[in-house]
Length: 219
Image (tube, rainbow, N blue to C red; front, side, top):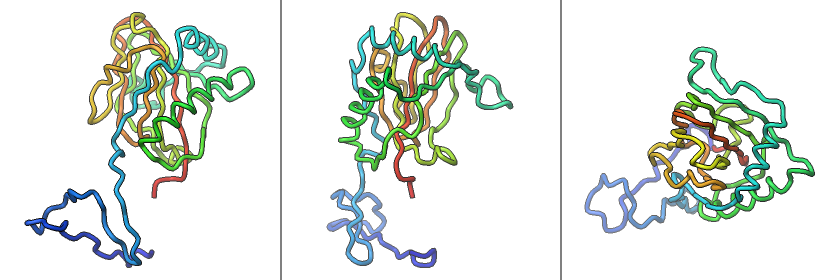
């Protein structure tokens, strides 16, 4: 469809008493030219929490594997060095860690049974993150330009025992702080465009792992 061919699709829902009601209580969506039904997805702001995906021993093993890789300063902007404070490493898939990818994939499959996104697979290595005292990550979205424009789902894996640190909570907008996500081995799956941040670590160290599941770019 060309830029000049944008028909006006909206119409008052059946039985609506107002000609300016923009909420369709039926949830049936609109009918496009040609008869195609544009059905809404009510889960585009949903967050899926899966508990106990990894046990404590597995979390320790993942932390060790992450630390065995080349590690980098996680700073992502030179203008404000406090914007993101952490140490990171990347974990590509290989024979010794295939079980991690498989476990994450199963969690994503379960979560996407509700979210219903069009997914293709892991578009990047797993991202291991260590936040020390004062560490954190300000508001951002994982959906950006270039290859990151194919990120459909963000997956955050909690590797640390919550008793090992203070602060460091994951906060999403507009959902708030994910209080249930502190349990070790939990996995949080959410659309990559949802703004989120990691609050500052007050004491101790928090370890996490992040995956991005790619698919056809939003259009």
